[in-house]
Length: 216
Ligand code: B16
Ligand code: MG
Image 1 (cartoon, rainbow, N blue to C red):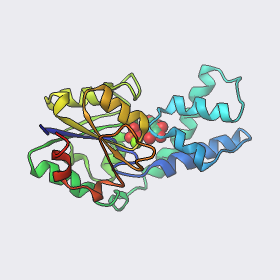
Image 2 (image 1 turned 135 degrees about the vertical axis):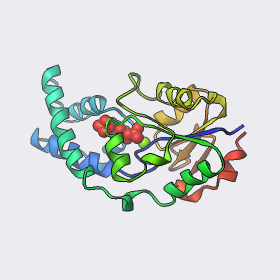
Image 3 (image 1 turned 90 degrees about the horizontal axis):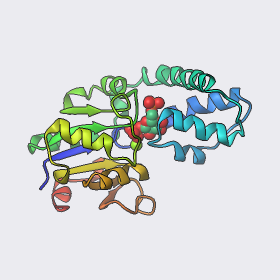
């Protein structure tokens, strides 16, 4: 039965994809090419360095050394952090705070499982740190989703068996990570995209905790 809810951050609690897009686009433009918002979809849930590799591929740039790549990723991250430092709680996605609070009120543990190394900054700007019993992010995992590491570490931190956990995710790789970890998966987005999820909703604000109990 349901004992813990694990939440992805970007795309579930807050929409930082637009800031990632702006910062990556600025970098691409400096390198002499551009990419579309549609291509940006492929970067959701993907780590910083892997995102850079995908983008360089779109620009047919193949001559960057590891050291140069690190500099490019740092340049992007500096622009990105300038933007997220301006975020306020008004940017929390509709109903997200209320849904997480309803879990806590029901005695269900809550955690964040995100690929982002900027998770602590974002949670602090959104004033959400107190809402989660554990935060597992890009600073504490080595294997990217669809590897279940981020969610398994979350379950471990909460002392809950993975089979009693539900993951809320907007990325296909994140849904797969949940399933690979033996957890239930709730897709946040479109059922056409998140086909492997146990159920799909447009947003946390559209969900009732009762719907989640029914998955068990
Ligand atoms: P950072 P999530 C992911 O967060 C984003 O969706 C993805 O676009 C980003 O590249 C990744 O975090 C790494 O972010 O550069 O801040 O470490 O969806 O797993 O919460
Ligand atoms: Mg996400």
